[in-house]
Length: 422
Image (tube, rainbow, N blue to C red):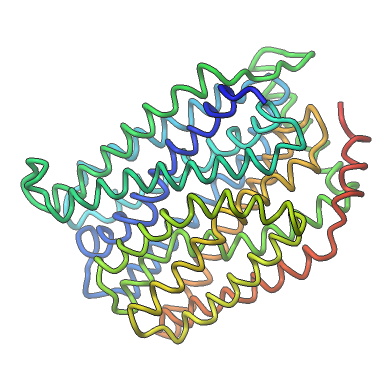
């Protein structure tokens, strides 16, 4: 491996994970309920936040395969990555200016930020084969997620200190501190994204063409990719499995903070749990790579799905802080691992020269899962008036995804991928 390329690639995870941690999981749900929307209508704000997540994910899901196809045809993965990273950075920084009660503008900027964050990951993921050979996919993918947990956790701890002790930083009050935390995320994301653009080369398509022609051919390539996925039954089965179980994972990532508040826990409890998950997630991501090498990656993902199912079911009966912390610890152990190994498993099934278009479909299904999950959770919560029932409903997604994954033959999938390589 070229360590400089690998480190530069993983630093993007370090950079944009600040958005996932401080914004998506941390302060945005708190601010959305307590500051931007009406705190007296918790169920409604849960529904609106779930809807905002779903709208952003739906837009990304629709765009991802097409953009991935264009990036392969025109060798523009890094250009698209830069564009969407800039979009996410800009919208995140603008959250500072949203005034109290203006939940519609806050939700709109959040949707745009989510589009920038998630769409950028389409092209970030597709660069994995450019920085590592297939035997190292699991390790490099796991390292990326571990770096994300560490980087996101470091900034989140700083942001929490700003929130709890604003005078340490010369900040007027806690409300201003949260607003400034969005600015720090934008700066962090921008600065630590620089290495991937400088030091990670993008493999050139031997038939490289100009962007306008790439757009036209992108539509043609998209149809071809869809046709190939239908022919490659194994990759289609894996994508369907991934869609289901990542539905549950992404929904918990995005909605856990809001659910904790709805269940009566304090904001301080939620912030502590998020730090706990980040600190556990860093070493756990690397350990999960070692674990997967012993029992095989597919089996490792199945173990993670099992523990997610147990944790989600147990959360229905959650009453004490200790229970809350214990469940968070379980999530921290498996969250990074299930994401990292899923990404490297899929990379094994992707034909060479078609990384962008296939990872476009991969991210499309990942985002479609984030469309269904939050709406399912929010709707069940709204209908029953009970956030615990909304969370419990996610179990079916983990069970369905796990059952389908047991039927995926990755050895056969790799053989078929060679036949479809350019």
